[in-house]
Structures are given as C-alpha cells and as structure tokens.
Length: 217
Ligand SMILES: C[S@@+](CC[C@H](N)C(=O)[O-])C[C@H]1O[C@@H](n2cnc3c(N)ncnc32)[C@H](O)[C@@H]1O
Image 1 (spheres, rainbow, N blue to C red):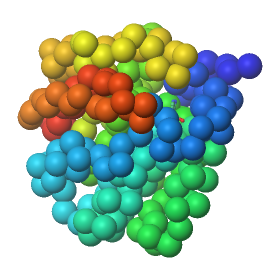
Image 2: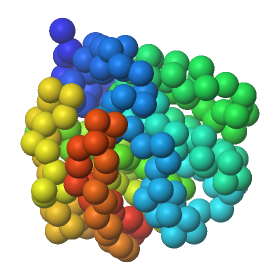
Image 3: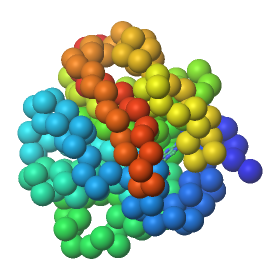
Image 4: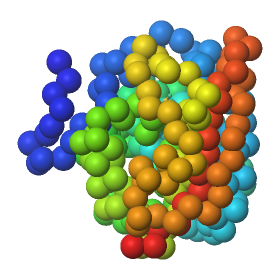
C-alpha cells in the first residue's frame, strides 16, 4: 500500500511505484499514450531557455522518454532522469550506448528527491498534472525549490484545458496558462506558453500546455 509520507517528512507524490511499474511493464514505451518519437516542444523550450551544454538538466518523471537521448545528441553533457519506476529507467538503460556518461538515472519519488548539486533546468512533461491534492503540489514545489538554481528555468507540460480527464486510470488536473502560473507561485516568472496537440500511438489527440518559467525568488 502506497503511504503518503516518509520517515524524513518529505511527501510521496501521486500513485506510487507499484502503479507506475505496472504501467511500464504492461506496454512497450512506444505504445504508451504519452509516447513521442521526438519531444519537439520540450527541445525548443530548453533551447529558448538558453541552457548551455555544460549546465545541468533534470527530467522529473522522465519515464522512458526519448528526451534524454535527443539532448545528448544536441550536445548537453549533464543530464539526469528521475522516475519512481525502476521499470521505466530500465527501458532507458536498454536503449544502450548513446545514453552513456552524460546521463544519470535516479529511481526516486520527486517529492523525496534532493540533489547535492542544483539543476539549471527542471523539465516535467505529464507528471505535475497527476497531483490532485494541494499538499502533493506543495511537496512538488518544495522539491523544485530545493533542486533548482536560483535563476534556473522550468519547462512544465501538463494536459491543457481541452485535455483528457484521466490518464493511466488516474484523475488529472488540467491547466490553462493562468492556472499553471498560479500553481507554480510567485517565485516563478512565466516566459512563454505553447499549446500542443499530441498524437497518441493509436491516433488520438491529447491537448497539452507547455510553460517556460524562470525562477525569480
Ligand atoms: C505520463 S508519464 C510521462 C513520462 C515522460 N515525462 C514523457 O513525457 O514521456 C509519467 C511518468 O512519471 C512517473 N512518475 C509518476 N509519479 C512520480 C513521482 N511521484 N515521482 C517520480 N516519478 C513519477 C511515472 O513513472 C511515469 O514514468
């Protein structure tokens, strides 16, 4: 049973590893609804943020996304993927040599994750929207504040207002630009928002909202 709290007082966020390992075991990466052959919007916003190749990028709840592979090809040298599912990270490992020295894979709940060195950019696609309770969102924001440099950037992608009500059998909270800005709080300045109509592997459409933010407090 997933227990919403840990010995050190940090929050476990969302459905937990049992749920997510099951999801990643049941279908191969390219048959998951959120699969993208190339995460174009994320790459564009990371480039827009002006992150240099030597700076540190973390993809939280990165799952088996190909974002890390594409960032390596683009020349980024210090990448970390954090995911609560060991199965998802095994899929990334199984892709092999291209994901060598510049990539660190960490099995952890975002709420509990604390890095020794802070990141210059925090990327999240399709994780924050699973946080339904205010206490969960606060746990996420605590982790974000603890792990991001003081002028760091955030790329946050959630289901947009026209997006689905559930994903992976879990309820989601949908966001428009104003809602996403309020959810991140006044320590973050919005730089730009983009809408994206994601095509699922079975040909459906899911509306996403991407926001690029800069930390100002
Ligand atoms: C919908 S998938 C999105 C995966 C990836 N970001 C992408 O766009 O392809 C959500 C991912 O978040 C992970 N996840 C869910 N809750 C988490 C948490 N509290 N801490 C870390 N990872 C979590 C799941 O294991 C899953 O890989």
